[in-house]
Length: 401
Image (tube, rainbow, N blue to C red):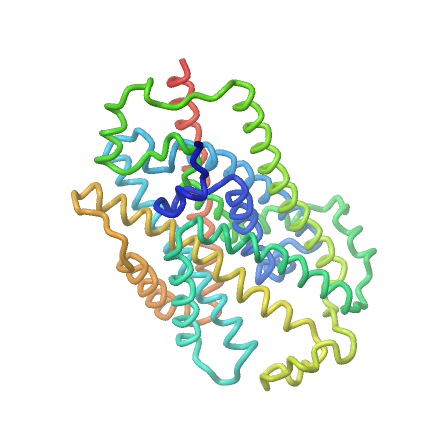
């Protein structure tokens, strides 16, 4: 009797089904694109914001493609890399995920500290938020994938609710400005917005190698190498082609959904920029429990707050898990036994809080960080993911021969 992938997930938290992979990919592509990025692009790229977004989403999709190739081999640290290279990539990716945690912990905590409460420090909000992220991350990639299976419908419902109960004074003819031949702000917008991308690198740490090849860590990998190929179960070529076609359809639908959602959002944002959308009268009268929102009664704040409270936890949980994989690889390279504990999460969380409190306390520092350090890190990690993805493809072709 064939073992279902979901049963393997109980003991292998990196292994996910293709449906869960598609949902995780959608979350990574969309998670950080709708919060502060629109206002950044509006100032840097103006009406060309949608072209900037389209270009960066295409680059992110290319990164996702090569990250998926790595995941199909069992994950980044299952590639046949020499130890110095493995350690170097572990440090590089760990630094990148720490930068992401630092920047977006500060961003999300600041947003909720200002939106929900009055005169409350950002640090306690950030600490509580990170604890929620760690608790979800402890369930593994498979656990997050299953949460997304439920949350996706809630995500769609909130957007539909906003569309039904929101009125706007925006002029949709503003959208035509994107066809203006002056592309002066395009390059500046690319550089300013890069920091919000590169998230597809998390996919490198998923395990899409299939039921028959879980590819465990060092000692189990050596034992698997000694096993004879006759011991592996065989399936018909027809079934394999059918599965491959089905998996490609799932990945294509996820990618198309993400691209369409992001571009539609920025098209609408460009059309109504400068004139805030308002909820119809009394739509959220029962939700005005916090005084900070009492003055904004009737605005669209509440669905946005609720939406980002959830998607932010999911996104940072995925970053936590990817950072933990880097820690585990470094421990493994040093000969230290890898254990399932919260020490890696605690180190990452404390480091993110310390760095954000020390270096991102002022708004100017945050802007400088996002437009100099974070964007450079995103570009570097995307190039690294593409290079490793090509390496994984070459290795797979060699095995097929």
